[in-house]
Length: 418
Length: 173
Image (cartoon, rainbow over all chains, first blue to last red; front, top):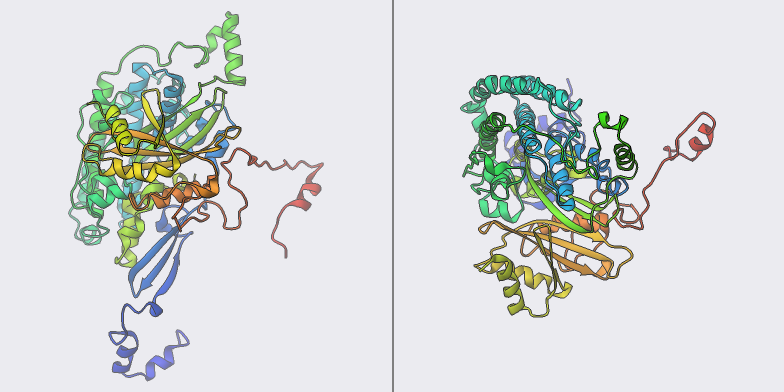
């Protein structure tokens, strides 16, 4: 049986000769012997189409360079040719695992530029949906992260619960993923009657499901072996490299935009920001797991004191009139026609709005020039910035650990390439 | 003293010529800084014990086409100890001679500047990593500029199928 061409040559070598050839006889850090490996773009553990150029010394990583752009769709350019309302649908496609927080960031920026604020009810519903999106996004992260490290069953459990959340999204927005539910000045429409019972049911059963995931992974020796002490970054480095979200909080830096620069009424809710100090893959895993509990707390509070009232502001220059008014009000017809053809105009100026997406700081820079179209939209996406520290995190690690490290910074390629 | 005023005061004392204009819009403060001074100002903001702008969150560029100077680069800084955000805006006359790189102050700047170069075509002095990141290496132009057209593809119907098909860039043989 011959496996490769080199088989026979190896058979003739003595053990000492073999050791001299491949073992300790060779200077390990001789750059001439380094190997360049192209990982991806079609690789299951890169969570999309990410290509990594890895320089290897044996199994150790000497250097690593991410190569991105395979999903570049020119979202920022495209939005400049659409009205403020129509451009919203593009934001869903950035971080497709948590479209709600992208919508929220963009909508808050538009509202800031217009100088309006959503009604209390709309704000509370936005918070509930964003926190549900955070949980669903963390579930996909946990599922794929565990799958990368060969824990198959976690994947199945996580996707079962995510399905429930997506059903809630479908109930309110008519879409499971590309929701576009938040609109300038409020929401597409009020939530249906079944919304509250469905979320309450979720709040009832989900804590026991988190306990299931914890039982599968938290003290699992294989999981600990693969994640503890891997991909360590200090808090100082993490700030200098612009890490945000759970990746930053895993390094002991208490920084959460929901707390430090509250938006959409987050200051009314009582919750903690989970912080871990080790800065390794396991710490980031712990942060996200504990965040799910905090999200549940926020949802419960928001649901308990969900204000009554309209979900849209009454300014007809921004929010289109309800269908019922079109039959008997000429003014409503005019507003309807103007808003759906021309759109509303925003004043000249630029604003910047940050929200805490499941991955970190998601910010929108929006410049208006007095016309109904944004003059410039720029997204500061957490995945793009977090990816920059990947070479730092994986230097000296084993090639197998890169998979764990990519999973732990939780990137979404749609958001990186835009 | 209010941090708003403190920042302005510190910049004015250290670099009296650096500050061009102060704009307040929707509770956000923007400081227009002269391109030649931007690095010094950033250094000051980062290292001053009262300010401590230790976090560079974003660099993004703007094309203001009919105006001159045509380009502007925004630096969004955050002071974590003070929980304070500030925007520095630099007007850029010649995109080939853009502002200095901030890589020495915040390592993330290199990565953010590559994006600006790729999509807007502003070259940062001292950044040797500028390359095509999102777009293919042989791409011409910088798509986020206002004079770069949005591309459309003509729709294929039965009557013009052949005509369009002949022009499509399929791989040859």
